[in-house]
Length: 112
Image 1 (tube, rainbow, N blue to C red):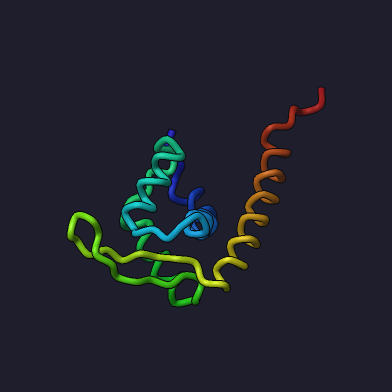
Image 2 (cartoon, one colour):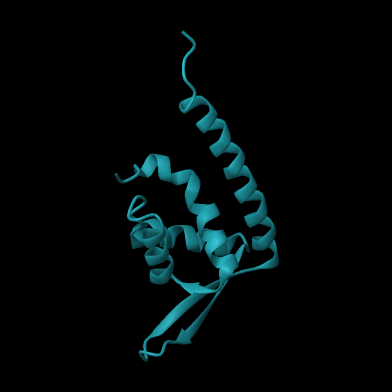
């Protein structure tokens, strides 16, 4: 089951920052990793990702550089900045807190 765009909004930034903390990546690679790791539940597309990448770059959380790929194509690679690393830690902690709180409500059984 795919997740609705409304539900996905709060997950985009922590996911991007976390993936870029693993290594620098180009846009399509980020989309592929998200879709693969979530087994298609998030179904990211270019229109989902690129506005967020531009916003995160403007905030100074990520930086980009153009490189030639092995295929000969030029790709824009993104990497975390120091500011982005600190933001990633905060965002992951926030997500974990929210996830636990929502699960505590949604997974609880009602008293008889």
